[in-house]
Length: 211
Image (cartoon, rainbow, N blue to C red):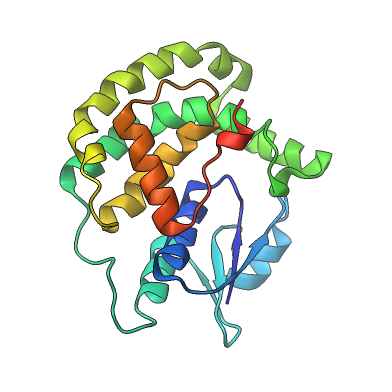
């Protein structure tokens, strides 16, 4: 199987998690930003992640990929519903996380941004979605202060060190985006949670690319 991704994309991180968690071998492919032709040829639209199954059929949508890979051994573990408290937290705070992460993603070293044309395409896409990226960078401390307070509301969950569950497939990709922020004030609980899920699912953090 081959999974096509953008390295920075939280939905792609979600799809990658299940392969590491279940120890399912796969090949990782990166689609260049600005390349609409490749994903459209595969699944009819410009999206990632895309799974190419062993028989050659393509599958989009991150959670569909998660559930497909999870059930391959007949013993799925990513079942049930997301913790409603965590689900609500994600909905309320994803924008603040992305206000920090997106301008840094556009400047960081990702394979999908390896050419000037690809980086420009991605940058323009995010400007259209989030507005002026320099302004977002300048307001970083405001977003950091907001998130430090908000993260306190899920401190108990972050401390729990529970087995990886469906909830983590929603929470971890968002919190992982914070690791692109150089100097983010991690609590012991947040750092421990990120390291725990990263190790359990064999998904690297962005700390080596932080800006």
